[in-house]
Image (cartoon, rainbow, N blue to C red; front, side, top):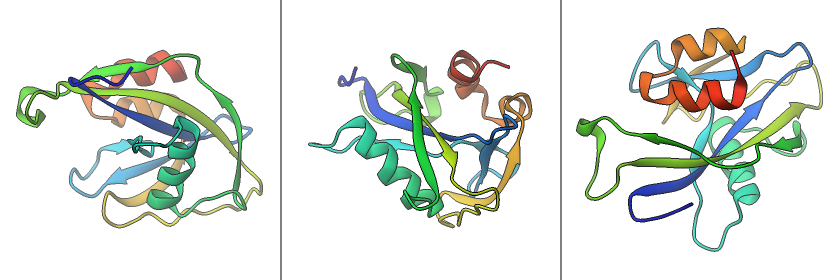
Length: 143
């Protein structure tokens, strides 16, 4: 799915048995929440990127969560004009689903991209995610 117009990346969803997902507040946009995500590096598989991004942004790794599923296909969104860089129009993502190994798992937001975290319902997350991400969030998570 990667092409000159859409950056290939992943989204990591950590979901508890009660359906709540681990959401993170952005440092640059107070009050906007999202899931961990990031680009796929050269030579890296989407699954490898999901583990790397999850650990970099949240401190969670294989001792905290386990991979349980992957969304079949890519989601795409277009950035608003003010966010576009060069020929890039937006991002295309693969989505990976993780579950915590313990009920008391606590992430450590990286402080760079994320400042806070909470468990929230999918509906609440979709209400709080930036508008241009709402369509793929609904597509994959429902709500």
